[in-house]
Image (cartoon, rainbow, N blue to C red; front, side, top):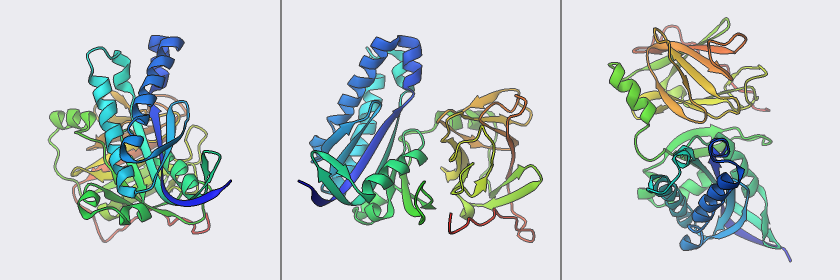
Amino acid sequence: MATIKRRTVLFADLRGSTGLYESLGNAQATAVVTQTINTLAQRVPAMGGQVVKTLGDGLMAVYPVPSMAVASALQMHESLETTAAAPHAAPAVSRLKLQIAMALGEVVEVNGDCFGDAVNVAARLLDHAGDNETLITGDLYDELPMDTRAAYRSLDRVHLRGRAEPVEVHMLPPRGVDTTATLMETRFDLSEPEGLQLLWRDSVYRLSRSDLPVLIGRGSTCALQIDEARVSRTHARIDWTGGGLQIADLSINGTYVRFTGDDEVLSLRRGACTLHGSGDIGLGGSPNEVGVPILQFSVMSSLDDTVPMRLPPRDPAS
């Protein structure tokens, strides 16, 4: 018998398991992934939630109280960190990253499974989450206590695949300090930037902080559309984080950054790094490879307001 209830829907997904299969073999990698998912699942009933199902490298859960769902997500991130840091943990476990997405709304419960718009929104929102990030919808954010809201930052309205109307989204950034950004900051004297210039073919776009975040990809929901075979529908996100400009990979084929004057190419692969100076962003391959779509960037210390060059507006019907 079907019942309709108002629930917070949570989807969690582990990324990086491919590396485990390569380094540990199928049997051991499967055991590690299964054990990790089971450990994460234990955090669900502990906060009053219900595990609906496990999904290979992930799980789906529902909660009657929004704040409990958010607390459960925090415990999952902490649990993965603890597992990776354990003395007996396989080295490859430290490469596992956790993405979580949540939405609030009515769900239809049928034979232990759940369906409905909130389920679809949470599942599709997961595609926009970076490593160790938690994304929540605006409706869920509005029901959280003020002290909990303070930890989140707005990503404005995000277009989700299959939905005509964009969804208001808030992000809980990864715990701790981004190691790639720290590495860059030790090598360069970074002043706080004021904007970013992007060059794609013959088009130049200049973005201020208020224009961020910006999604880059092949899909019509992205503010900067790049229609190339190697580019994912939602390939990367550039955002203002921790006083700097950060690019996060959200793709299948990876995002690669080469800074001007540096021979090293950073492979993000669902990771992120701080942008500084200028350089090239390879979408789906290294900028050193022939045929890779390359987006040139330049971090600006000031903006020329007399020549405002902005991203083209998205088609409201898309």
